[in-house]
Length: 272
Image (cartoon, rainbow, N blue to C red; front, top):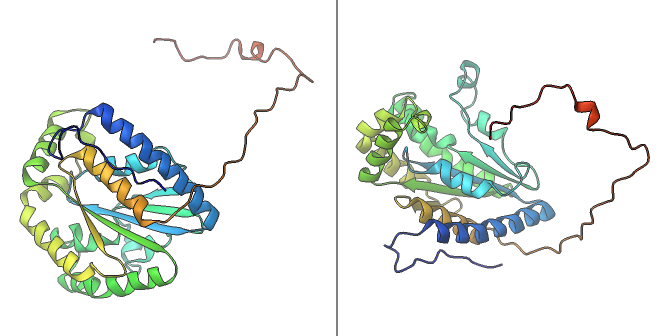
Protein backbone atom coordinates (compact mmCIF):
# COMPACT_ATOMS: atom_id res chain seq x y z
CA UNK A 1 0.00 0.00 0.00
CA UNK A 2 1.48 3.31 -1.04
CA UNK A 3 1.22 6.32 1.23
CA UNK A 4 0.86 9.33 -1.01
CA UNK A 5 1.43 12.75 0.53
CA UNK A 6 0.88 16.12 -1.07
CA UNK A 7 4.18 17.70 -2.10
CA UNK A 8 4.30 21.44 -1.64
CA UNK A 9 6.18 23.40 -4.28
CA UNK A 10 8.24 25.28 -1.73
CA UNK A 11 6.87 24.68 1.76
CA UNK A 12 3.68 23.82 3.61
CA UNK A 13 2.82 27.52 3.54
CA UNK A 14 3.09 27.80 -0.26
CA UNK A 15 -0.03 27.57 -2.41
CA UNK A 16 -0.65 24.17 -3.94
CA UNK A 17 -1.27 24.63 -7.66
CA UNK A 18 -4.35 23.12 -9.25
CA UNK A 19 -2.12 20.96 -11.48
CA UNK A 20 -0.23 19.56 -8.50
CA UNK A 21 -3.42 19.12 -6.51
CA UNK A 22 -5.14 17.17 -9.28
CA UNK A 23 -2.04 15.01 -9.78
CA UNK A 24 -1.87 14.06 -6.08
CA UNK A 25 -5.65 13.66 -5.88
CA UNK A 26 -5.59 11.24 -8.80
CA UNK A 27 -3.02 9.07 -7.04
CA UNK A 28 -5.03 9.02 -3.83
CA UNK A 29 -8.28 8.29 -5.63
CA UNK A 30 -6.61 5.33 -7.34
CA UNK A 31 -5.70 4.07 -3.86
CA UNK A 32 -9.33 4.53 -2.79
CA UNK A 33 -10.34 2.24 -5.66
CA UNK A 34 -7.88 -0.36 -4.33
CA UNK A 35 -9.37 0.10 -0.87
CA UNK A 36 -12.86 -0.32 -2.30
CA UNK A 37 -11.96 -3.69 -3.80
CA UNK A 38 -10.44 -4.79 -0.48
CA UNK A 39 -13.51 -3.70 1.51
CA UNK A 40 -15.74 -5.75 -0.78
CA UNK A 41 -13.35 -8.72 -0.77
CA UNK A 42 -13.09 -8.84 3.03
CA UNK A 43 -16.66 -7.80 3.78
CA UNK A 44 -15.49 -4.88 5.92
CA UNK A 45 -17.94 -2.45 7.52
CA UNK A 46 -16.76 1.14 7.88
CA UNK A 47 -18.40 4.34 9.11
CA UNK A 48 -16.78 7.71 8.44
CA UNK A 49 -18.32 10.67 10.26
CA UNK A 50 -17.74 14.22 9.01
CA UNK A 51 -18.57 17.03 11.42
CA UNK A 52 -17.30 20.58 11.70
CA UNK A 53 -18.06 24.24 11.48
CA UNK A 54 -20.29 25.56 8.71
CA UNK A 55 -18.31 26.37 5.55
CA UNK A 56 -15.44 24.19 6.76
CA UNK A 57 -15.44 22.21 3.50
CA UNK A 58 -17.19 18.97 4.38
CA UNK A 59 -18.95 18.72 1.03
CA UNK A 60 -15.82 19.24 -1.05
CA UNK A 61 -13.82 16.77 1.04
CA UNK A 62 -16.51 14.12 0.78
CA UNK A 63 -16.80 14.67 -2.98
CA UNK A 64 -13.03 14.20 -3.37
CA UNK A 65 -13.36 10.85 -1.59
CA UNK A 66 -16.42 9.57 -3.42
CA UNK A 67 -16.20 10.88 -6.99
CA UNK A 68 -14.12 7.95 -8.34
CA UNK A 69 -15.57 5.06 -6.32
CA UNK A 70 -18.86 3.18 -6.48
CA UNK A 71 -21.82 4.72 -4.59
CA UNK A 72 -22.91 1.16 -3.82
CA UNK A 73 -19.75 0.68 -1.75
CA UNK A 74 -19.08 4.23 -0.54
CA UNK A 75 -22.59 5.27 0.50
CA UNK A 76 -23.18 8.90 1.43
CA UNK A 77 -25.77 9.67 4.11
CA UNK A 78 -26.85 13.31 4.55
CA UNK A 79 -30.11 13.30 6.47
CA UNK A 80 -32.55 16.23 6.45
CA UNK A 81 -34.15 17.64 9.59
CA UNK A 82 -36.07 14.89 11.46
CA UNK A 83 -39.79 14.45 10.80
CA UNK A 84 -42.34 14.55 13.63
CA UNK A 85 -42.31 10.75 13.66
CA UNK A 86 -38.51 10.61 13.84
CA UNK A 87 -38.50 13.13 16.68
CA UNK A 88 -40.56 10.65 18.73
CA UNK A 89 -38.12 7.78 18.08
CA UNK A 90 -35.03 6.81 20.00
CA UNK A 91 -32.60 9.58 19.00
CA UNK A 92 -30.02 7.29 17.39
CA UNK A 93 -32.66 5.21 15.61
CA UNK A 94 -32.80 7.11 12.32
CA UNK A 95 -29.03 6.90 11.94
CA UNK A 96 -28.75 3.18 12.68
CA UNK A 97 -30.87 2.19 9.68
CA UNK A 98 -28.12 3.56 7.44
CA UNK A 99 -25.28 1.62 9.04
CA UNK A 100 -23.10 -0.48 6.70
CA UNK A 101 -23.58 -4.07 5.73
CA UNK A 102 -20.61 -6.23 4.74
CA UNK A 103 -18.52 -4.62 2.01
CA UNK A 104 -19.72 -1.05 2.60
CA UNK A 105 -18.24 2.27 3.68
CA UNK A 106 -20.92 4.67 4.94
CA UNK A 107 -20.02 8.35 5.03
CA UNK A 108 -22.15 10.56 7.27
CA UNK A 109 -22.25 14.20 6.18
CA UNK A 110 -23.21 15.26 9.71
CA UNK A 111 -24.43 12.55 12.03
CA UNK A 112 -25.80 11.84 15.48
CA UNK A 113 -23.43 14.59 16.62
CA UNK A 114 -26.06 17.11 15.52
CA UNK A 115 -27.25 16.85 19.10
CA UNK A 116 -23.88 18.02 20.40
CA UNK A 117 -23.71 20.89 17.92
CA UNK A 118 -26.52 22.64 16.08
CA UNK A 119 -29.35 21.16 18.15
CA UNK A 120 -27.74 22.25 21.40
CA UNK A 121 -26.59 25.69 20.27
CA UNK A 122 -29.82 26.59 18.48
CA UNK A 123 -32.08 25.25 21.23
CA UNK A 124 -33.56 22.31 19.29
CA UNK A 125 -32.90 20.01 22.24
CA UNK A 126 -33.00 20.52 25.99
CA UNK A 127 -29.91 20.82 28.16
CA UNK A 128 -30.86 17.51 29.74
CA UNK A 129 -31.02 15.81 26.30
CA UNK A 130 -27.64 17.30 25.42
CA UNK A 131 -26.07 16.13 28.67
CA UNK A 132 -27.59 12.68 28.30
CA UNK A 133 -26.24 12.41 24.76
CA UNK A 134 -22.69 13.24 25.83
CA UNK A 135 -22.94 10.64 28.60
CA UNK A 136 -24.32 7.86 26.40
CA UNK A 137 -22.46 8.49 23.13
CA UNK A 138 -19.15 6.88 24.16
CA UNK A 139 -20.99 3.76 25.30
CA UNK A 140 -23.00 3.63 22.10
CA UNK A 141 -19.89 4.03 19.95
CA UNK A 142 -18.11 1.37 21.98
CA UNK A 143 -20.94 -0.98 21.05
CA UNK A 144 -20.55 -0.04 17.36
CA UNK A 145 -16.82 -0.78 17.42
CA UNK A 146 -17.24 -4.03 19.35
CA UNK A 147 -19.75 -5.20 16.74
CA UNK A 148 -16.92 -5.13 14.18
CA UNK A 149 -17.54 -1.76 12.52
CA UNK A 150 -14.57 0.53 12.00
CA UNK A 151 -15.66 4.00 13.16
CA UNK A 152 -13.67 7.02 11.96
CA UNK A 153 -14.58 10.57 13.04
CA UNK A 154 -13.34 13.81 11.47
CA UNK A 155 -13.88 17.32 12.81
CA UNK A 156 -13.24 19.97 10.15
CA UNK A 157 -12.02 23.24 11.63
CA UNK A 158 -11.93 26.51 9.68
CA UNK A 159 -10.62 29.80 11.01
CA UNK A 160 -12.81 32.79 11.79
CA UNK A 161 -11.31 34.81 8.94
CA UNK A 162 -11.69 32.06 6.34
CA UNK A 163 -15.25 31.20 7.38
CA UNK A 164 -16.19 34.87 6.96
CA UNK A 165 -14.63 34.94 3.49
CA UNK A 166 -16.47 31.78 2.41
CA UNK A 167 -19.83 33.01 3.67
CA UNK A 168 -19.38 36.31 1.84
CA UNK A 169 -18.48 34.42 -1.33
CA UNK A 170 -21.69 32.38 -1.03
CA UNK A 171 -23.78 35.51 -0.50
CA UNK A 172 -22.31 37.29 -3.52
CA UNK A 173 -22.13 34.37 -5.95
CA UNK A 174 -25.50 33.12 -7.38
CA UNK A 175 -23.86 29.76 -8.11
CA UNK A 176 -23.03 29.30 -4.42
CA UNK A 177 -26.08 30.81 -2.72
CA UNK A 178 -27.74 27.40 -2.57
CA UNK A 179 -25.05 26.41 -0.07
CA UNK A 180 -26.44 28.88 2.48
CA UNK A 181 -28.79 27.07 4.84
CA UNK A 182 -31.05 28.72 7.44
CA UNK A 183 -28.50 27.62 10.07
CA UNK A 184 -25.44 29.13 8.39
CA UNK A 185 -25.82 32.80 9.25
CA UNK A 186 -26.73 32.18 12.92
CA UNK A 187 -23.68 29.93 13.14
CA UNK A 188 -21.56 32.89 12.09
CA UNK A 189 -22.91 35.19 14.79
CA UNK A 190 -22.69 32.43 17.41
CA UNK A 191 -19.09 31.43 16.70
CA UNK A 192 -18.09 31.10 20.35
CA UNK A 193 -21.26 29.19 21.30
CA UNK A 194 -20.30 26.62 18.67
CA UNK A 195 -16.72 26.64 19.93
CA UNK A 196 -17.85 25.82 23.47
CA UNK A 197 -20.21 23.12 22.19
CA UNK A 198 -17.34 21.64 20.17
CA UNK A 199 -15.06 21.64 23.22
CA UNK A 200 -17.69 19.87 25.32
CA UNK A 201 -18.27 17.30 22.59
CA UNK A 202 -14.57 16.54 22.16
CA UNK A 203 -14.01 16.28 25.90
CA UNK A 204 -16.83 13.75 26.25
CA UNK A 205 -16.51 11.69 23.06
CA UNK A 206 -12.83 11.68 22.06
CA UNK A 207 -12.22 8.12 23.23
CA UNK A 208 -9.59 5.47 22.65
CA UNK A 209 -12.03 3.25 20.77
CA UNK A 210 -13.48 6.12 18.68
CA UNK A 211 -11.08 9.09 18.60
CA UNK A 212 -11.67 12.39 16.84
CA UNK A 213 -9.26 13.57 14.16
CA UNK A 214 -9.05 17.34 13.66
CA UNK A 215 -8.69 18.44 10.03
CA UNK A 216 -7.63 22.06 9.43
CA UNK A 217 -9.36 23.26 6.29
CA UNK A 218 -8.35 26.87 5.58
CA UNK A 219 -6.43 25.42 2.62
CA UNK A 220 -9.12 23.28 0.97
CA UNK A 221 -6.82 21.45 -1.44
CA UNK A 222 -4.33 20.38 1.20
CA UNK A 223 -7.14 19.45 3.58
CA UNK A 224 -8.74 17.11 1.05
CA UNK A 225 -5.44 15.41 0.22
CA UNK A 226 -4.48 15.07 3.88
CA UNK A 227 -7.89 13.63 4.77
CA UNK A 228 -7.81 10.97 2.04
CA UNK A 229 -4.21 10.01 2.85
CA UNK A 230 -5.11 9.71 6.53
CA UNK A 231 -8.24 7.69 5.81
CA UNK A 232 -6.23 5.26 3.70
CA UNK A 233 -3.73 4.88 6.54
CA UNK A 234 -6.46 3.87 9.01
CA UNK A 235 -7.82 0.94 6.99
CA UNK A 236 -5.15 -1.71 6.27
CA UNK A 237 -5.66 -3.04 2.74
CA UNK A 238 -3.83 -4.80 -0.06
CA UNK A 239 -4.02 -4.51 -3.82
CA UNK A 240 -5.97 -7.43 -5.23
CA UNK A 241 -5.20 -9.06 -8.60
CA UNK A 242 -7.48 -7.70 -11.29
CA UNK A 243 -9.45 -10.01 -13.52
CA UNK A 244 -8.61 -9.56 -17.19
CA UNK A 245 -11.56 -8.07 -19.02
CA UNK A 246 -12.23 -8.72 -22.72
CA UNK A 247 -14.82 -6.71 -24.59
CA UNK A 248 -17.17 -9.12 -26.42
CA UNK A 249 -17.80 -8.69 -30.16
CA UNK A 250 -21.18 -7.42 -31.27
CA UNK A 251 -23.35 -10.22 -32.60
CA UNK A 252 -24.61 -9.76 -36.15
CA UNK A 253 -27.46 -12.26 -35.96
CA UNK A 254 -30.73 -10.35 -36.04
CA UNK A 255 -28.96 -7.16 -37.16
CA UNK A 256 -31.08 -4.25 -38.44
CA UNK A 257 -30.83 -0.50 -38.95
CA UNK A 258 -31.37 0.38 -35.30
CA UNK A 259 -30.66 4.09 -35.86
CA UNK A 260 -33.46 4.37 -38.41
CA UNK A 261 -35.98 3.53 -35.68
CA UNK A 262 -34.98 6.75 -33.87
CA UNK A 263 -35.83 9.00 -36.80
CA UNK A 264 -38.80 11.21 -36.12
CA UNK A 265 -38.29 11.11 -32.34
CA UNK A 266 -37.79 14.32 -30.41
CA UNK A 267 -34.09 15.08 -29.99
CA UNK A 268 -32.17 17.39 -27.70
CA UNK A 269 -31.29 20.52 -29.73
CA UNK A 270 -27.59 20.70 -30.61
CA UNK A 271 -26.75 24.13 -29.22
CA UNK A 272 -23.08 23.40 -28.56
